Length: 134
Image (cartoon, rainbow, N blue to C red; front, side, top):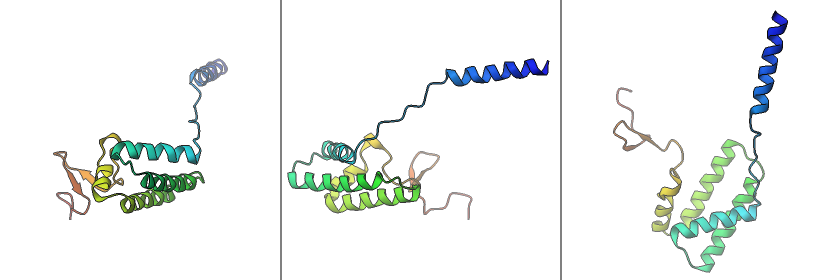
């Protein structure tokens, strides 16, 4: 009886495993494709038309796309993102950078943990202590 039960369980597990769809890997884009995509998205969001600035933004995106291809740890990826934001802040006007950071299509662009939502759904900086904690 135990043997029959084991065979039935094994058959059930095998059929469940076969019923699952195979995991599809997303095709890897080349650094050039990634840089072009990121630059085009930024141009659409901000309406930049100056060819010199476009070229500068493309080269910046290409540099960081090539770094990303190396397979970074989570901490290195965070450093890369912070470096991108710092470089964009230097390359864009203050108005463009603010528009970029607040664009609704890709919320949140702020680093995780920078703000928390309070019960009334307003954002508060993390520096303030939650009520009841000292």
